[in-house]
Image (cartoon, rainbow, N blue to C red; front, side, top):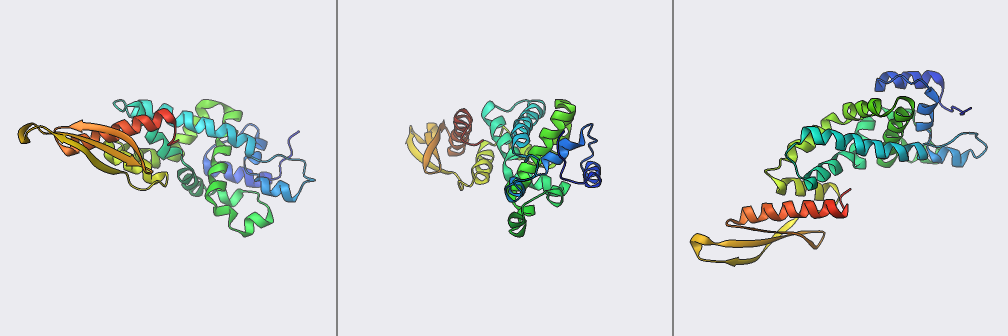
Length: 241
């Protein structure tokens, strides 16, 4: 029998806020227990949300990736990976959790709570993923997918708007800034040919390293190709996830 530390009335209240009714409400209870509470109360016969959050993290990635295949039919693999990275990063998940009011229901240790734990980005993001994991265990993938897309629709729509396949420069800038790397910079490697047949080769630098190279008859075309190559390279090495 799983010990539920959150009162049933609170769990029922949260079910209404997230618009999900659990068959096994104790799963939702587990999703709200932060490890700091158990650290301060080692005698408690319960588990934290860490394991269920691990599962929810994978479900969120899958649900968002699944949606992008339908909603971004012309995007490349690199662009899809970049958009997913924007949507599933901790800051984005924390915003969704805050809209749902998950911080109000988290069971935290006194120290963590006194230091603003109910509003901490990592706690909120982990709680969101844990709730997703709980829904998956209780009702399966389809219910979890619907919850993820309903909760993240605002961020998903914004990321897709930014990530137009026609403008990889904008997408790369969003990804780099979201990851805390600062804005990408572009530099001309060489310029060859007569004025009417000029050919530019341009590199894009991310985090102080060359992330992609492009060529074109105009600088802007070469920059766009360099940005596209950078997105593909970042996707291959999973450095933006």
